[in-house]
Length: 260
Image 1 (cartoon, rainbow, N blue to C red):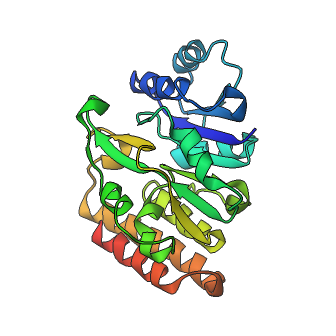
Image 2 (cartoon, rainbow, N blue to C red):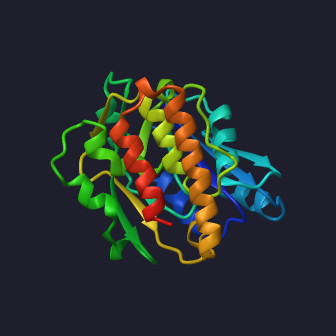
C-alpha cells in the first residue's frame, strides 16, 4: 500500500459524494492506495449512507468515532492507516483524476520531503474555478526551501506526506482553529524540502460560508483562540528550537494575529 487518503467527516451532506467520486476516478491503481473515511459525531443515518457509497470498494474503509472534531478524526485516520504516505482531503473538496498518481510520481525516494499540489477554489462546480491563495504560491519561483514555501504549510491538505515525516506527531485536539498550520509547523522539523507537483495535479477547495472553519466568532473568542494557538507554537518551538526554522516560527505567530 503506497498512499493512505484520510477524509474526516461530520454530518456529511451530498458534498462528500462529489469528493468520493473524484477519488473513484483516480488514474492510480486501486491497489496502490486506500481511503479511510472517519465519521465523527452522530452516527445515524450517516454511517449507513456512507457504507452505500463505498459498497464493493475493497480499498475504502469507514471508521466511526462518537467524539466530534476534525483533529481527532484525522488522528484516528493516521492510526488506522497503512500507507507509506498520507494524504488528507476534506469531505467537501475534490481532486483531479491524476491527483494521487501525480503526487506519488514526484515523491521518488525523497522521504524527508513533502509534495504539494496546485490548488483552485470553487463554489458549485470545478468548471468555475478561481485562484486560491496557494495557487499564486504554486506558480512562484521559490525553490524547495521551507521558509520560502511556507504558505503550503498553512493546511494539511493538498499534499503528500511521508509517514516518517509525521512519525508519532498528531493533530492538537484542543484547538478548533489553526490546527492545520500548527500540525504542519510541528512536522517542519522533519521536512527537508517542499516539492511542487506538475501544475495539472489539482486540489479543488470548495468555498462554503457555512463550513466550521468560517463560522463567525466574536473578537474575544478569536483572541482567545489566537492566544491558545500561540502558546502551542511557543511550546513546540522552545522545546526543540534547534530543530525549527526561527523565521518560520515568527511568521506563524504573526500570521495567527493577522488572521484573528
